[in-house]
Amino acid sequence: NGARTPLIAGNWKMNLDHLQAVAFVQKLHWTLKDAKHDEDSVEVAVFPPFTDLRTVQTLLDADKIPFALGGQDLSTKDSGAYTGEISGAFLSKLDCGYVIIGHSERREYHAETDEIVAAKVQAALRHGLVPVICVGETAEDLDKHGASAVPVSQLKAALENVPASAEVVVAYEPVWAIGSGQAATAEQAQDVCAKLRDVLAAELDADAAARTRILYGGSVKAANIAGFMRQPDVDGALVGGASLLIDEFSSIIRYQK
Ligand code: PEP
Image (tube, rainbow, N blue to C red; front, side, top):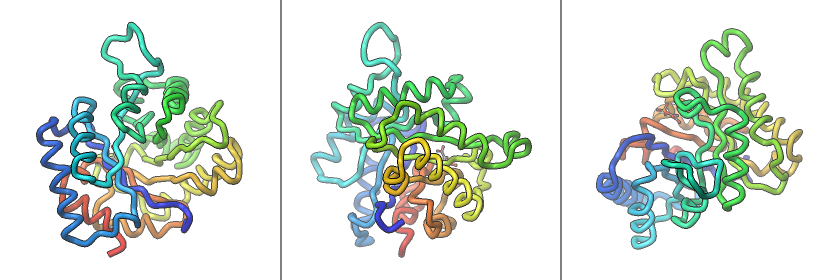
């Protein structure tokens, strides 16, 4: 996976208000600087709540902090009478490069179907955002169909009408591993990520499969990140709980050390 820049992404979920967000990002930046972290070796992205985006954007810009910024969701629509929704246009204007789409918590608590996920991917691309497409099987899916069947079908659905030239990121997140402390093994993650890369080749093309980053997510921590990153088809991590802990997250980012 030498040609693909590793991506370590922190999904804050509904944590840290805009003041806590500033303190957190500053501290993370200084911790990495103190550790003499090579900024070019790994891309770091943070996904704060919507209400933090403006403040975090201002801080990243003012202090030249080299983290990418992303939203945790977006609307399928671009503007209009959709109370409570956030347009991809707004995220773009706040210098978001990424947006998480189809996180299992959105699929579970907000009834997001594969069709909605596909429409959100289209909305992201319309506004120049890179969708971080989350796929993964529940424990029940794993029992009934094995690990890869559900993520493969979710990814196929999400890629409908996506041009081969589009930049997307895929995140394989087994639902049973999210927030459970029980991560998949590096071998399990590799097995499914390789199958997801085959989906990219079939639905987009060989070049897209070769250049697209596939992340693993689910109870990633400093102690297990290196094993995932050694896998040929794992290009980074989507980190939830551990992304809120400065020392833990900075150790994850510095997994090569
Ligand atoms: C997530 O929600 O994307 C996630 C991977 O969470 P955690 O790291 O806490 O398992």
